[in-house]
Length: 450
Picture 1 (cartoon, rainbow, N blue to C red):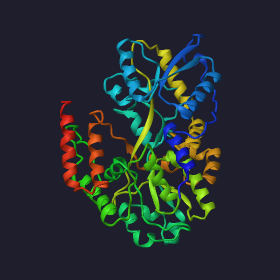
Picture 2 (cartoon, one colour):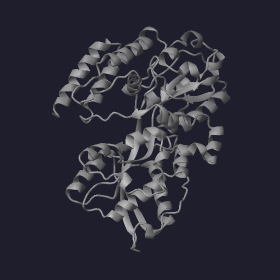
Picture 3 (cartoon, rainbow, N blue to C red):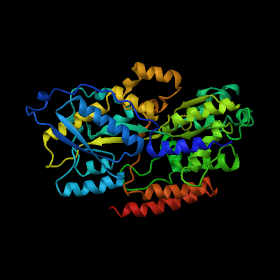
Picture 4 (cartoon, one colour):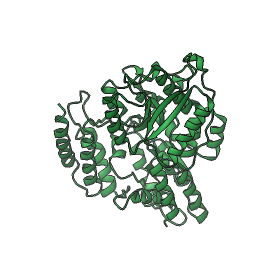
């Protein structure tokens, strides 16, 4: 049974990254004399590419910050996309006319070119580095120093049917590895879920991302440590993708929905879990708000499902190591910027990512907050009481996740992998053969950079 309102709502969530506007908590900005003796308001030009409700939420933060003090005025400039930010920023550097702050874009690329100021050189004392979620801090630090400041992040998590799992005599501990999860098939498949029966023990999301997360746990990487060799056909990759091929095509205990228009495959994967056809699926923390409501609706119709979320499994006896993606703030390094503008940019970031505001953003969107202290915030604790496991992504990023792979070719490696994974997941092609071909194709592109 499909619910069109679920699909429509999830489409909005995936496109905008948010389902409701977040309430903004004001904080008192540092006194003007702490940063400068001047009494003139300093304009902070801020480029970002956040649209829809997510962009509205950011602009609320900006308005609240501007109203909280009169030393700085943040002036947002909305750019169409992250790739457009990169293009315009390149031109701005050349013309010595850069903004004081940027959110999104290829922060790592600009850093590698020496075009990013170290955030820690300008952050006020009120910015608590020790409170930043571990994974986010790893991504923010370059060569031992904090170069960027995390805004929010995501790392795919596991949504599962707790009622089915427990009725079968198991617990979340049995989801600790992909091997223990797949071994549940005998107890799970065929179970009655009210108006359906369990057909699949799990449904990964279509594409290479879930595969890459599993391979990361298995010790595999996209390229060698020296950056010279594409390694997507290594034994670590082959082992994981071969197991997935077997689970999908031979054992048929897992399923991949693919194709369709837009996010159709995502809706179908989610629907199977909501309406009792699979034990669970791997999805975005941004699914949380609509997923919880969908399960409540399904239960009201007679489906057996108890909403639960947990971190991704490891591979064998190895710890999980899924990738996470973080939106970063960064301050461009250019002679056109004054020290005061840089201080103002860092001051705004401190306000935008304080405990209260990052908690409000997380509650509104499902994306991970950047501070551990949100877990101690009374408002967030109250939220967790009625929203089970809403902190799963935050905990995963803090305990297990690793920074996302940045493709030095601009996408050739990840595209070659995507094509290979499709051949295995959809067409049941031999794993070693398709990965060898993908590696050769990607290697040619990497060699062009030498």
